Image 1 (cartoon, rainbow, N blue to C red):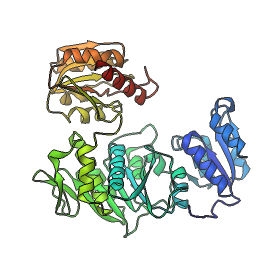
Image 2 (image 1 turned 180 degrees about the vertical axis):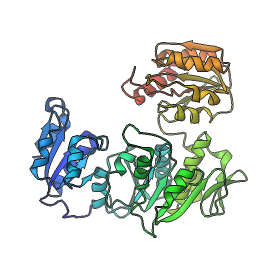
Image 3 (image 1 turned 60 degrees about the vertical axis):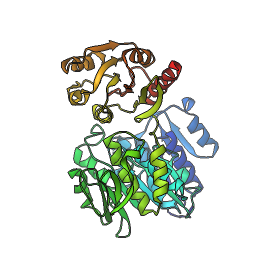
Image 4 (image 1 turned 90 degrees about the vertical axis):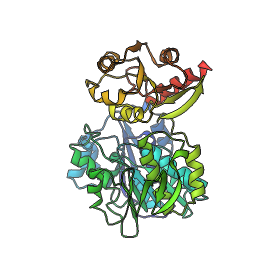
Length: 450
């Protein structure tokens, strides 16, 4: 870990805990800052805050009192999930107090270079692929961000021999000043998180922050097939490395003659890739581009891409039972994600869908239902999804109480060669605490079928 005096004897407020806040507060304490932590959860229900108290860190819990801004803080390290509309955050910015996220803090003390991945979809899969390819290639990668350990924790053990592969949200990227990855990746850009960002333009600008500090010695790997992403590259000084499933981009990664190519060199056959779906080909091309830039061999890339079946809960292969393949895509909490999953399969699909009702309808899902031969629904949106299915001619429709019940019902509707897919197109909170819990229950029910 690099030494820095930037926070030495400075008053720093860590706003919001969770894993990132705890790690940031502990690191700042080590760096000699006078740290105060403020979290909305009461101290009696807050073991993380209690642990920080034991380190001698000042903790204020229960609410976010605006009076804290009168205590002369010189920095605020904000939990990414706290919006900029929060009165404390707004007040700090009005007073000229820098508001950063723990990613910025991690960068300032890291001896290891970063590979940063952002985008609306595909971040986790791309991040995992890059990590696995670098590891197989004999590098010493560390994984951080939303997918792994908190960045400000990882950097404390990292050396110049490591590479930190980090998944980055727009929330995190809004809070950077100097953060600069050696290689940045933008997977794609769609309308998202507009309840947090004031507009699509603000959301796009936050994503573009991943390259804003890059120099002519750095690289930006980007989706050439999306005009909105291409537009973001105009803000970059980095060397531009495109990837495309539709065009031959000779200075980047692309498909040609059934092969994954990088800068004119065949890397491996597409037919050998274990991960299904066109959208995953985009993630694969992005990962290949990064790893070829980092000197990873084709043999290492081939090993990973022929054995990697997906990140947990993201179009994850679960099992084959009596020639029916089961996939867990519980992370598909919106229509776009479910559409991408459904269009990954050419054969008959038994779809398990439903969940939290956010007031929207599901007509946008219709084009993706062409291979769905049967539907099993659950949750608050069951009736809405059933309506759409009937309108496209799906006649085999069953409604059940939950995901656990859906699995044997789906199996009963299936035939040999079918795919049974959990891709709910909805958040899980009407029945389950998280999409991970929902996915775990699905997989447990699948394994019980055996």
